[in-house]
Image (tube, rainbow, N blue to C red; front, side, top):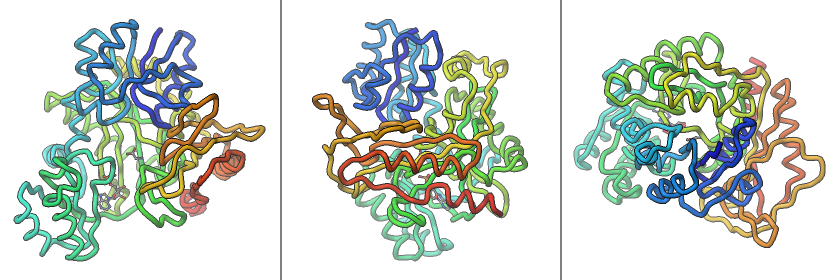
Length: 422
Ligand code: AMP
Ligand code: GLY
């Protein structure tokens, strides 16, 4: 079979590695991929948002199945375009990807169907929003409606910050048209859990849970990033919590999307907060998380391609989705300065005896060398019988990888360890 994976991050690298385990897979094309992905797939210089380019390429090469991984092409309708051209896909159609593409849509969906989430108000007018935040309880959370590279959420501790948040999104248009509408919501507290789930629009089968580390520096200090590391499973996500999430969040969300005439097929990401009042949805993403995927897929025992095809074909109920009971830890190695400005073009070298899986996110091949080419450069994932062993193994191999201006957090998994110790 010939497969095509859209995207260029560490997440896509992890997806490609897992897909390759299926003996029927002959070729995987990555659009556009990166210098590290090039070891595992054929990289093609077509951008992840180039819908027409992807359709043309898939037809020309006779691609049998396409996996659309990033949010942008999903929200743009790449799956609809590929399916219309006769290319079967894993990923939601445009009318379902809106669950991530519009926070107003997702909040209204949760309210209508009783899925627990923070209480909220929607504004399309800056004056009304500014008046509202004068009396809203603090801290308050201000969110741009549309996609904003994961940066469209501002948590205001004071009135001044709340006013500034509204102004920057609605008046200064910090996130462009994504800020034409905003959601102002209640500030929730509790441990956060990421749950990625396979769904065919009717049945939902969650993957192993995980914990992201969003801040740039140790002890959860510094700016919010795309994610500096992950562990799986997440110790806060006990069997009782999982059962509660299934009944109050996962099944009702899938049923709600179907009832709205927007059946969601693909991977639905539930960003959850375990509040004193029970689990609540912080956000939905219409795709695999990055770097959650880099710890979740290495623990998957079932064949990924088979499960993806079942999601597309509506046969997930009859398809086994099994995970090992081991632990995984992924440490992201980034370029100093990320998530703001950073230098690129340093050679990446790999020492002897690396046992972990390395998923490359921001690198390019030049004259046979691998050079840094992004903020998040690569992720190092180790799998072991226990969380402490997985953390140790990941950091042992991180120390064998060198590049100029490398930086990484030293405490990935420490919060999870504390939770395990009770
Ligand atoms: P998001 O981009 O929706 O994932 O939000 C980024 C981060 O902001 C989340 O991971 C949470 O840590 C935080 N956050 C978002 N909404 C809330 C909320 N209502 N209460 C507290 N924290 C929130
Ligand atoms: N790691 C968070 C995300 O993928 O959105």
